[in-house]
Image (cartoon, rainbow, N blue to C red; front, side, top):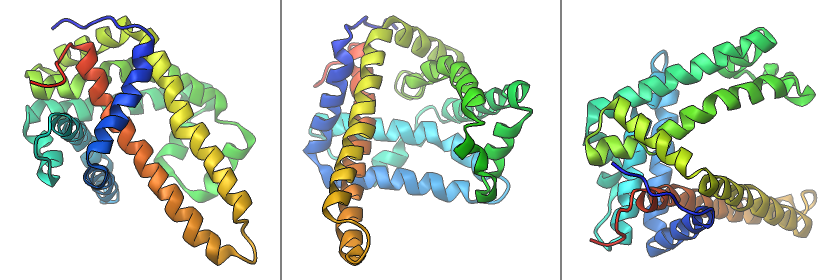
Length: 262
């Protein structure tokens, strides 16, 4: 496989392409994104094996969302079976990718104990509300930054790995290798994509929320606020999330030279 080297502007175009795909059928793609979330949350709450089960299926579910984006772009039928159909393509490799990602994440968190004595790892594993004081004091900033640095190459290796495994039949090693190289060759585009994601997923929704809160402040009219602010922010969250997931397919399509339409 050979990855294309794209200009930085391509990263911005992926966001626009993702939104264009979402616009082809907003209710359907939103339903698939919600189904993805519900599945992962449901698996996570299972005792003992929950986190492992969720990690194992996430690569396959991600492939399902990319398949849905590709089918929508090509005008082909899409349904709930499309989301879960991703689990059936090169299943063993996808499960192995999920397990390996969980192991690498735990390894990175474990290494952060060299900095904070294991506080961040304990917090992430326990997740107790009573343990959230370090978040307010900023005690986790340094270990979290350390984990982010360690996880950057991991994220690069996993960006395209599931779809390369599912659609191209690559094994674990080759899918991770080609994904890592593709991301490295297109680091400018991915920096632009990251900046665009900060704008689209954080700054703009934050501004909208601030505007809504100023128009409908909590207090005497809290009843009205709840029934206006929450639904609007939920719609915005679905639009943004759907655009992000669809943009993953756009990045794959452009980097690996897959034509938009057969």
